[in-house]
Length: 118
Image 1 (cartoon, helix red, strand yellow):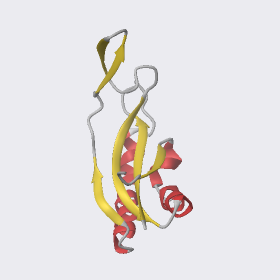
Image 2 (tube, rainbow, N blue to C red; image 1 turned 180 degrees about the vertical axis):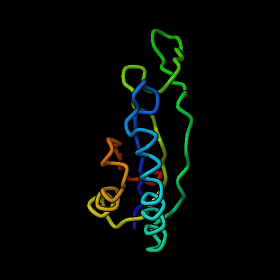
Image 3 (cartoon, rainbow, N blue to C red; image 1 turned 135 degrees about the vertical axis):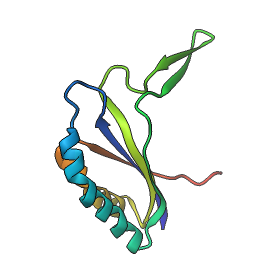
């Protein structure tokens, strides 16, 4: 089994966020059930955590570090949550990620496989 990071991106900062607060409220129980189902299969490595919408991005350009506010200056997407799961391969991890009920309201789930240190 490999470890995979699931990152849930959604619009948290615009005047009309997607999913809306009402949609998030509607999706809360299905989301909790989805995570509980992953845990019941013993595939949840680290539980979901919520993150603030602010963040900082550090880039090194022209021999100087530049720090900007917010991870997505050009877009409205923020990280709404992330957690670790176990799956045999990308296909299984993607199938698990497809079950995220917030996707139907406009959220995006990114899947990344952990690489063991050399």
